[in-house]
Image (cartoon, rainbow, N blue to C red; front, side, top):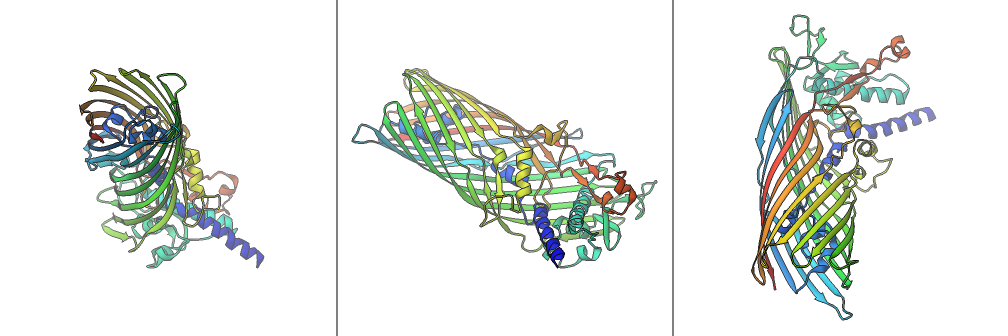
Length: 572
């Protein structure tokens, strides 16, 4: 009885470890995708200086670099309204095929802010600020790019079969005996209600993508098998696809609501803190098709939505050791999100004229917690009297510290997301961002501005091989098999500001940005199907080993964006 109890505990822990691959769970790539979306909007001055305003301060936009900056506001009240237009375009290359897609401008409101400063009795100064801003977006489009293949690459059917084999391999080792996931179990009408079966396995089997020679289970493999003449044969050899088609659309945004307090105990020391409430909305659509011999194909359609809210706090300080020089530092806690996710999936196939399809259950909703990275900033600026300002900001975002957790649970090694959280640490590092800006007063009323921003890629080199193929498995969210690895970002900005009256100003800015990335149709995976039979002497001797399924090469992407921003500000 003790042995049986131990076996049940082991299997229960194992089932939790496999949940990142089920439809109902989030994943390593979900966490990184949501956590790396932030690129804060701000006023036209902020934008023209590429966001390098940590030590310049004054404006509410500087709260995202250093909250102490609002203490530098002079005068009573300030209100700003910033509108913008964003025009992205995407260029992709996949196996020599190229595609170009234009994105959409969905977020005209960039920022609204109100500030108030007041002197206090002891000679110091207190400043308050409230701001609403667009804090990030999920715009990403791949519009029907096609890869021409040679039938030798592994297919999405191979990936789903391998995922099934691996779950059975792990469970059989934990149980100490051979287990089988039968055709009857996978094909049952209530299969989705069983917590110990990966949903990918059910979709793969009921969608006609995979099968096994023994109805009782065993080694699953792709159902796309052909003889030496290229004709379908149930006893033929597994072949990869002749072509692959992928469509991906992601959209959504993050809106921040800032409540900040600045304090100036002396003319050379400025302190600040900000409490931020964040609202997140994300939607995606993935369409994927593998085409095999003749009219044989498999098709996947996945729709996903994620929404919720969270909060964080930030602290900062700015000092002026000598006249004109400002030095600052800031720290921002992670944003602690409580999120809800829902899915819709359809998997289908046509093999030898026979069609199959399966849809997800009516409700695939789940809730989870997300903790985004810590952010640390260093700021410097030199004020050349009333003629110019030169500013430099450095920021480190600890992306590898992104964490998933269940509701009512802190992220820990016992979490069902423990493996995903470990993969985030293994596959990603931090992001280093350098911003610099220069403002020159051409006249007492006209300012000319320019800036530059560089952000590094957080992807560890061990995660990819030769920039084309994945070198280790990425955990994806159930049947949303596609994932994107962010690359470097370079952005150049310019703008001007004009003081219309002593209390009214108009600022304009333009930004040209280039970001690289790589998108994979589905992950690399190591298939343990060949070693499921532990009684096989060749398996025991190591002659037969797990098979590496490389999947397909990455789609290499370049996102080019043009952004125009205008700010109207009032002092009163």
